[in-house]
Figure 1 (cartoon, rainbow, N blue to C red):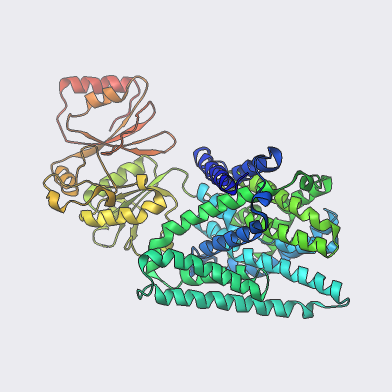
Figure 2: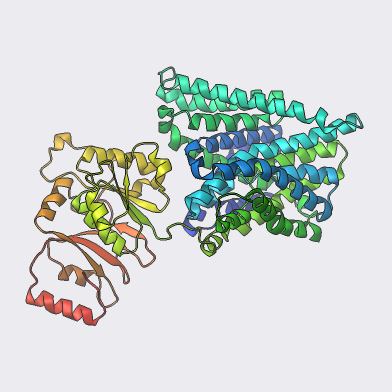
Length: 616
């Protein structure tokens, strides 16, 4: 099969699996592994090794490097204020214990040769941002355990690779020079890792100096950054194999904490690159698996996988966090969640060949075993993360929430209605004085500038899937919507429309604005004026007997529908561009004038009450 066709199929399978995961809520990694396995060894549609030959390994290696760099860019040291000690423990004590327990399980349960078990135990230290971050994105976990898992995944990926390198170099040294000791192997590797980290840090300094000063034009920033990452990875690997993973991780973390404002514009692109790389690499690796690799799996391997889930990981976490300030329910959650991903498979495949060259026959088992670990941990943790999070009470808000930017009488009235509908809601404003009404009404609020980068770390945004920008400045509202469109979604950021008496010559282009609230496109001045006239929000619950049409007959003719809330908490807005389909069980929130009820309207209201309709 032609290489171009294979590339197209890899893209279709990877992105298709991501889309199905988004629609169904299933773990995306499970679907990608299944798609690649079916396309490769089961159906034989394509063979990546045949299609790409010797290029396959460097392609995967560079992809993993870019993924680690992108993950490092998301690590801000300000997150460590509440999790720093736990992350440090897991990156030091946790690595040693995880390596020890994994190796012992490999020797005494899986029956592996000691050398193979020790090397594989080092690789098992990794958890992997490629699986942890999507898992956290799909499930709403509280910020502290989520932050610990994210930091552990990104920091321990290169650490696990180094552990494997240390083990391999020691066994190679013994094969060449019997009687060699660890002191002859470990110090040079540590020095190599330090040098690689310095290379990554210097590269980050160069980027942080050049980008803000205009030394690189805007259209070249992404190509320059990606080329720099690949260059740092390759150069560091010349010092010591797999040291490049350390270098790119340090480079990403350093850049994330240097406050390089010009990097914010490339965030959407780098996230897209990460999604494409994760999808492609998982498809390629799972399609490269051979059925012969799976035949090595026996009952001993099954017991080893069980021990990995219920003994190795829990013991590692609980012992590492002894005496820490992390609550026990969060410790137990961390002890359960440890899915493995790309780095485990890629490194295992690499060292399986090297161990075979050294004469260790069990080396071939690492390929099938690594895939078994990935599949079992992803399935076990991916399908149970919500249940375990609820059981241990570490789950965040379960109903979709609303983030309201701008504290005005109208937004506070809206926030009160959303609170009554059990939706998480918070009002953000830079003025403490304007937030006075929110404090008086008992509405959750955040005092600060929403566009300030520090807000991302001080305000937990995960519970809020919808943003409403409703300050008195329409241009500022558009700026806020543009900033958060990539994170929340373009179809989930809203602002009030242009005011009816606005000058079209000064109107902002639709492409720069969020979706306009209300089908009528009410502007900031429009809603403020109507509220001064006594307009109010009204909630109306629909039923089989009292449908949307009857509700419209009941409300004043001038009433405007704002949004509806489903029974499961899903929020749908009535906008200038889209109108949701109301159905029984929905609650409609409308903005209505204080029109006096006619006798017919009062009769309809009375009849509605008899039918069990709730209207306020």
